[in-house]
Length: 118
Length: 118
DNA sequence: CGAACATTTGAACAGTTGTTCAAATGTTCA
DNA sequence: TGAACATTTGAACAACTGTTCAAATGTTCG
Image (cartoon, rainbow over all chains, first blue to last red; front, side, top):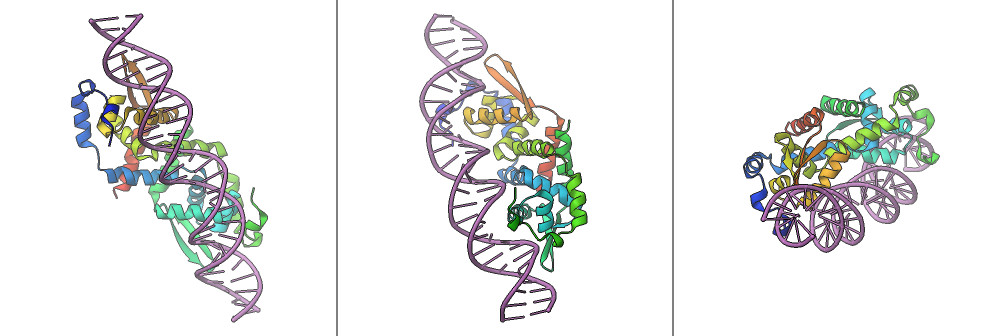
């Protein structure tokens, strides 16, 4: 919790609005899960992976070759993306093919890129 | 760059697709800027701030009181959000009121929350 | 089985991040 | 001007993150 000396004087806060907003604030778990979702999207490498998987299902080596990175680094990031449920995988022999989990991921990437291109 | 020993054997990569995707990969700056945008959205505190500002323009102390955090912590996060162009501010006397920079931020927050609520 | 290769895993490392604390800066008003 | 309060700033700190490296695990095929 917060040290009282750090809070503003109560009579100076716009009490009505603050009280209203505080009661309607979504539960912690909502913000926690949403943060996890955006965390998965906030790294350049993961964005490149998602962009590439939006073009085509790809195996780890394909991604490593496409992005000029080590298979190990790619695999670690794919693991992060999988835990966050942004990608799915299927094994085909020695290779493991990854693809986007759903259209939400695709549209979120596109919305993000579009926003930065303004 | 990548140590050659770390890359997969060239003949095993799906060359055609990889080459096609590699040539169409957006520029680095696109991914960098998009990552900055999502980075601003990937923290719980910042998501709460954005949610609150979506309800109403608020000053630093209002936000601190609403979220139960110190004004200093809130101010630091608002600074981060302002640098990323997600919020704007106006001074009114001793107080500084913050609000969302544009509808993109609002819709992105809503899309993120909606995604986590499935 | 054993060789070859794709992938995963875990430790280690430097770099980044969010909060706290103390101090500085802005602004109002008596 | 000086007191009072809102906000900002910078240093410090622990916690977290992304990559590398070496080693382990999966899978195919001779």
